[in-house]
Image (cartoon, one colour):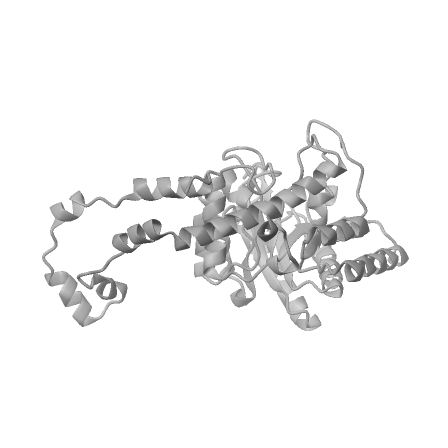
Length: 388
């Protein structure tokens, strides 16, 4: 159907590393040929994607000469212009090279920390040249296998120092990035610092300029540890800290699977899309996922189409949920405030305190109340399954 055909205005983005994934895993070598970044850009433009995101070395090899770097970037910028695709977000690969085996910003070796700053500043230059407005920090190696190796307080302190340093560099260069921290509980390290959205938001408050920093939650990362991703995103929205978001599929309690968006737990994905749309979130809908290892290049583009189509289907389901008379009647009844306690409980004043303190609440009546959540949940299921 036409409403499920993606448009640039849907703000769907993919990383070069997502559609460019060659199917390698810890137990097997690659199964697909490398797809050139220029082809990725061209094809995503044809499919209706808005943008493409990148780590520095997704585009420019880590050992490229300055002349090679300039040629690669020039060709990439031409492909962007020809396809109408933009680069909304950039990041740095601080996890692949052996130099970062004990972390980048939190490494025990000061030389490694300095190199990580150098590499990130160069990557920020590249992102700014390509037009990126958001800069993500995923600390994939910022952690430990054994706490005998370093005091976690030192790791967090070093993390803070490097982020403050890079914020100052951004100010000096005038890039005006929005910085987003991406939490993950573990993998590839045994434990990673700042493992959840809540811990990242708490850490941000300790930075010199916390207003410059937000979060980039990923569905798979929060789900790996059995947490509710919708609640994590809601907390980020409530705090004004949702600067970017990574969408994919994940089974709870597993390794980082990065499945196609919608491949797992369609109800959770529905409430996620509904939250983003109802909240008026204006950022990119970024798919940080990759095709199954079973696929050839044609399957990669099927994967990309599927991510975008599923989001649009769930967006339409959210519209139907909000317009459904029975669903909305139940919600209205559940949240009714016939006695006017919502205002009294929302903010302390001497008057509200006296009213609540002197109220004669009927505990038994409140305890006997039915909330109709079973009916509400089943109506949601019927809507998602297309039987309503």
